[in-house]
Amino acid sequence: MHYLPLTELQAGMVLAMPVRVVVCGQLRFSLPAMHILTVDNLHQLAAHHAEYAFVALPDERVDEEIAVESALAARRTLEIFAGADLGDPNMAALFDQVLIYRSK
Amino acid sequence: MESRRLSRAEVISRSDALPAFPEIVLQILVAIDDDEANMAMLVEHIRRDPVTAARVLSLANAAVLKSRRQGAITDLFTATSLIGTGRVRETALLSSLGNFFGHSSAAMPSTFWHHSIAAGMCAQELALLSRSGPALGAALIAGLLHDVGQLWLQCFRADAFAAAQAGAGEHCISISEAERECFGVDHAVIGGWLADHWALPENICRAIRFHHVPDEALDEALVPVVHIAEVLSNALDLSQGCVNHVCSFSVPACDVLGLKWNADVQPLFGRMEARSRHASKAFPRIGLR
Image (tube, rainbow over all chains, first blue to last red; front, side):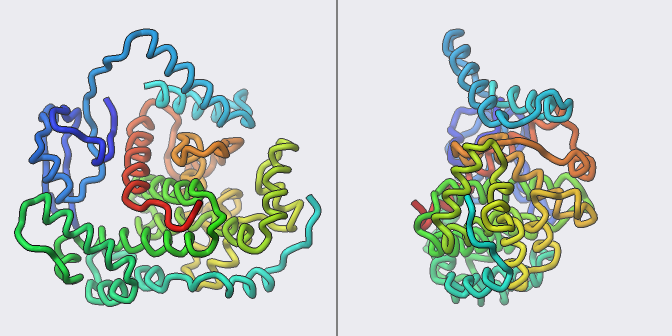
């Protein structure tokens, strides 16, 4: 499951969480969880200036691809945190969450 | 890395050579706490900025096209009514500051703008975490402008700034430390001077000034927001720049925001990345290389 910006949403994707566009406390547009997005929905989301949606994406990667991408994500995260003290529990906790996020 | 020390007077006097700071930002700040206030004022100021006006009309017409309504929108009042003042305000801020950055220095890499956008979006998400937090518009502006001191250095001390950046890498020190060795002050201090000179509100000036040393000003709600926003924009690699590094962050700032680094932050990371990518596509670089 991923948060995707509007420009990357496609018809056929399944909402993992409801979409609710609220302007000035008023609900202007909503779609329920598990709803399958249609082309019309994509237009409606754009018309209501939604920025993103949380969708369920089937992971069609084979194990080898997952392993390679996880290794790349881990290497990049280590580069970013190269100057950090990962012995510090707070820094280690942030690093762990970033690594989990990047590995999805 | 030795270079001549910078003074506030020099920074301010040279800043006159930058493009004029966009007036619309200051006007928006007048009604920052009211999402729907002063539509007439907002439209009037957008009208004076052709690039921003074109973006607002384009956004409105995209909505018309996609909702299959009839007729193109050519009037800013209609466009603002359709899109909502809050969204128009965000568009005006991103557009006007993007123009300002782009026209200030053609040599500034595009990753600078993408990093600024990412920090702005992260700052808004962090501001949403706390009901007593800063206004979303102020969080966006502070996030967008937090590194404006680097823009000044690139414009007026490009060679020494490049040397400071290279030195930071060679000596494994932070860019702020390298800047202080080189100029006597770092980009956060320079940015704070500029924000003050442009008559930005005190909370935004302090957020820029203290974004690398937030513990010195935790009484200002915007300070921990901008500090953690920059940390996360780097940690999540949101500007896709090779210079993204996380060396430290303020635990007290996290405490103020109620942030705990556990599984609960995963949705926050997702929203930050999705919004940053959306905004980067909607507001691509202007004049930056």
